[in-house]
Amino acid sequence: MKREVLIRFSDSPSDNLKSKIQNLKWGWGFALAVVFALCGAAADAQQPKKLARVCYLGTSASVSAIDMRPFRERLRELGYVEGQDVTIEPRDWEGKVEHLPDLVAELVRLNCDVILTSGTEAAQAAKSGTKTIPVVMGYSQDAVRLGIVASLARPGGNVTGMTGIGAEIFGKRLELLKETVHKLARVAFISSPTQLSADENLKETEAVARFLRVELQSLEVKGPGDFDGAFQAAIKKRAQALIVGGGGVFATHQKRIIELAAKSRLPAMYPNARYVDAGGLMANAEDRLEQFRRAAEIVDKVLKGTKPADIPVERPKKFDFVINLKAAKQIGLIIPQEVLARASRIIK
Image (cartoon, rainbow, N blue to C red; front, side, top):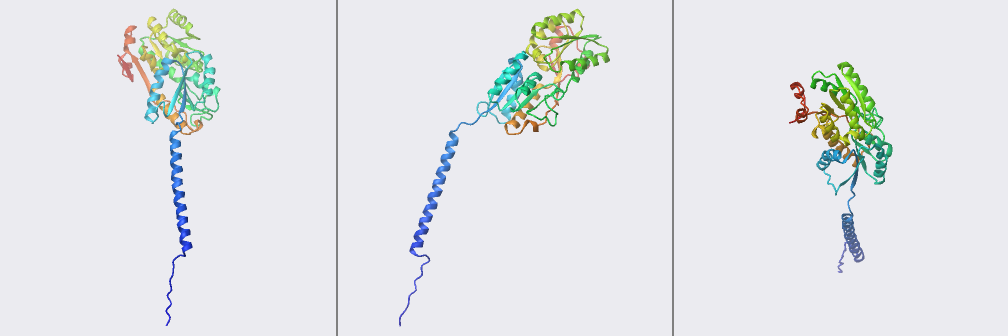
């Protein structure tokens, strides 16, 4: 009897060989993919990291050093390393408003990722000089009324950032002077036509002066050569105190203004605390250091892709009333206790 032996192969020899070849191909393909990925990663690592370029349009070198300190500090807190993640290109107009268009044009040629501005004049110049580069205001007085932005909630265009509360703060400054100087009847108000809100500031101060029954003397300063004449005119009219208007011309020459006020023995109210830190008597204003910290946060948003038109403009939430007792002693002024009690900071 014949026996039949049935031998079964799960795969034919040819099919088994094909499978091995296919597996070998997949293995080589995976290895090559890994090699290419590693090569790509190495190439990416060798490519230099793109630096974000922040261009800064400031008033003067001395003022810029003060404003940029809190800005740089906040950028570091947000994870930026200057020279590795970000580079800052500063330009200052040094109180010469006619230089602003050329400085803005220079920043535009630098292909900045964002332009940070200090002051109303710089913000307006940046708005006029570029419609594409994002502009962040570190400070500007009443940017809505001046037409720099369309509104606080929806600024539109390429400008956003920090703005002041408007001319009403000048009325508050006059009120504080009235409380500080005994029997105050005459106040000199010096302003610069380069400050876009100068007329509005004067009108607001005049309205409060009428209410307080204080005579207000308006003095215009077009440039540094006018300061001596303005103070002489104030003394001639027997002014008992002084209000200094805002603007880059005054900020650039703040040391000269402080010296003239002390020499004239005029109690002076200044537009921001920088003057008081430099030796001036008093200031009631927005906290500029806090504003530039917030400006750094807004710049961070812009660098990460948010459009300025989608970032609401912010009004100040913190104000400084700073008094310098050394300056008061220098001119023989005794500041009432009730005024000292309202100060947020006193320099002794």
